[in-house]
Structure formats: C-alpha cells, structure tokens
Length: 69
Image (cartoon, rainbow, N blue to C red; front, side, top):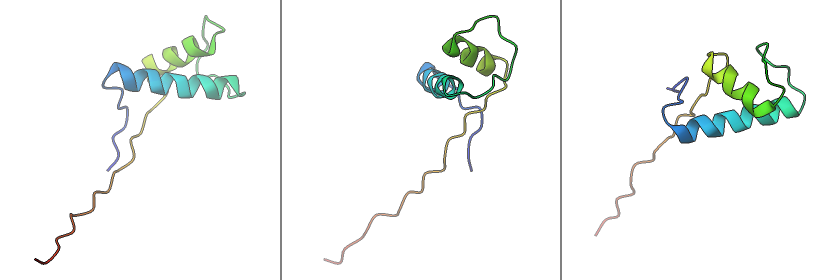
C-alpha cells in the first residue's frame, strides 16, 4: 500500500518541491496561478494548496535466509 501526501517532515517536503520545480523548469505547466515566477516557489505553493501528491512506493522486505547448522 502506498502512502499519499507523505510530506510528513521537512526533508520529504524539500525533496518533493525540488522534484516538482525541476518539472516546472523542464516545461511542465503550473497547476496554480502563482504570484512568483520562480519554479521553487511555485512548487512549494502547489504542495501547500494540495495540488501535488507525493507517493511512497511499497518496499518489499524479503524474509531472512535461515541456513541449516
């Protein structure tokens, strides 16, 4: 199960804003009408208003290998 909107700490917020800012700089259309022209600020505003979701992939953990003695 993936966790949506996982901006639960500053690190994940910064990583998400940086990724979205790169998308904006590469030509993606902004999801809001922003006052700023800076991609980083637009990305932060999009996240703050809930237009950008951050999805964590599910990590599969393999059971430990038990070797016979």
